[in-house]
Image (cartoon, rainbow, N blue to C red; front, top):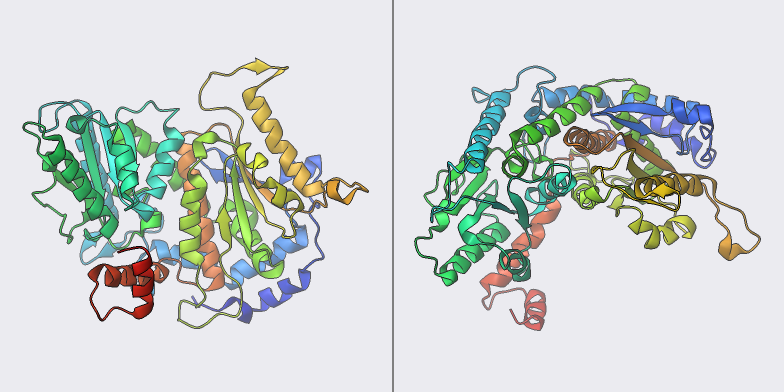
Length: 523
């Protein structure tokens, strides 16, 4: 297994010759649309009929994936090879939902069994909370859970919770506090009954500035409330590493563990997502998320690009970024339940592949990760679709849609239900972007040729949600392999943390530019 920069491999140089000679529409026939579906797991399919692609290009993308050994590298990752070179760590988030390529043992510990043991502990704890066998310090049952964490400790779990909130009536209502901005915590806490609220502190290190600040904010609010017999420690649990200050602390009711082999943005299927989702919906719902993710992970092992949805998605993205030069990708879920899913993908994709050096710390001479953004349809249609349709940049589109709504409650108006209207808008947008519409009035002319893909499912369920999550995780992983990046560290977030600490420490030796801006903000 070898690692090569993209611009050094033969198949990429061949691929560059295809720039501009493929138009959207090669597969835009009734038969072509049907034949462009790939099983993505969890009842989902990935359709690439509206992409700028032909059979020759697919063959060339296969050659590139093979030359860059992406499947071999995926198998190595699953087996516990050190893939995160920046931090000299294994990458094991797929292991939280299944054992796909043999046991992974580290320092004598079976990692799969470790992750299972923590989820089983969470299952037992959640059950006791829901049955009121574990209560708050004043003897009242918990009816609310609040996750306190930032970045991957917030975005993924929050997106998954919101995606299932309508379909699975919460046993405990969940809220999330992430920003160190006091307005965030105040907005959540002002409507809560502290006596019936359980807080989850999520920090792998146990030292995350924002998380600890918000923990102390909660403690101070409880002190101000002056509730007789109230003990904050009996209302907090921790999701952290076994070596962190929060592990087994007397300041928390219980601790559940993760480790350094699971990055925050990939942690939704670990204890980070498991605790809040199991408390909110029951462990069986979280288990269905794991099942869907495991299905997608297994399908991603197929070396045939036509049978591997995440690989096809990844390689088409490489073509669009590096050959066609498109700088952005829009994620457009036609499901209100996925309202925060694009925000999760922003972090997961841009923090993973927003790199300009190789895994060997060599400066790269080609583009890497695109800018990711998005909103649910049809809201986006009345917002930024103007630019997508007629702007100067072509932006590839990733649509997500479902045949059925989550809730069996709809209204027939003007001959169609709301769900039918939603799906009609989705179909219309795919075709409008691909084909465009000619007008001699240039202001009304749509050039078309805007490529899109469609991830389609019967209904957004916990299982299909898990598969959707894993599809994009694996897509980003494959693209990182092709670009020869370390997709699993995030040095880009560190400098700001260091400088913020300097500002807060103050002192006469502070950098004069830092001090200048600090004075402007009256710090």
